[in-house]
Image 1 (cartoon, one colour):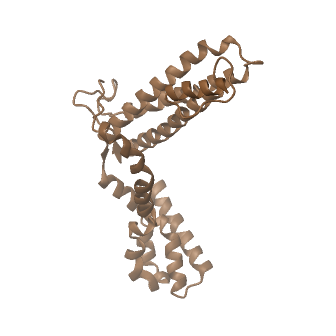
Image 2 (cartoon, helix red, strand yellow; image 1 turned 90 degrees about the vertical axis):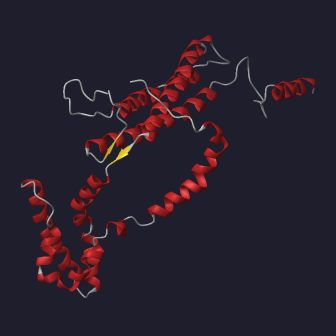
Image 3 (spheres, one colour; image 1 turned 135 degrees about the vertical axis):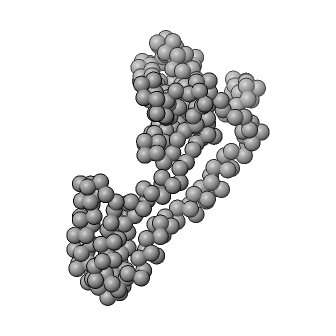
Amino acid sequence: QKVEQLDKMVTEKAGFKRAFIITGQTYTRKVDIEVLSVLASLGASVHKICTDIRLLANLKEMEEPFEKQQIGSSAMAYKRNPMRSERCCSLARHLMTLIMDPLQTASVQWFERTLDDSANRRICLAEAFLTADTILNTLQNISEGLVVYPKVIERRIQQELPFMATENIIMAMVKAGGNRQDCHEKIRVLSQQAAAVVKQEGGDNDLIERIKADAYFSPIHSQLDQVLDPSSFTGRAPQQVRRFLEEEVYPLLKPYESVMKVKAELHL
């Protein structure tokens, strides 16, 4: 009873609510796995985010911040490489690989433990936290200065929207009394023709013009503008985003409001 009482007092004095019931001289190295798993998962998320930013930058729909004196490429003066996102991806890969260290350590602890559990963790734990800190600083800098080009996005949507709308066009024709199989075949032929113009001739997507010129689709010609409204393709996405922010994101950020006004700056 005295041992357990002492253990409880020391645990509380150290600021913990509970302690491991059974340990040797050290806590189980499974704890290190749990800690680095969270950081490795963060690395995967950041890698995904920054890869998407890099892809969108390639499409000229989005750019990360660019300093006045920053050089985008030493060889091609016009380029504005997404070097912050590239840096995040590079460091995120390193962060994700660090999870292998505690996995290996925990798996070879023999009976109680061996002293090879020590030197390795002093390196990988510190590296993981330092890497995560650098990644988050860089990602904050990207987020605070992100540039979006709505006109480029609008142009790309207009190029792809006719193909995306084919299912809605078929449904509208069926409601107007058309045969689904016949309509599907008509749309398939016209879509292939329009795709050939885009791919082989480098032209604009003229599928809608082809549909308007085809008498078969005359029952829905007056509905095409409504069918092609981009907002009709987003479904519940806006409501889902608002709910996600309100119920999950904002409550998590609230305890840190006092330290969230610091702007992230990089010295490039």
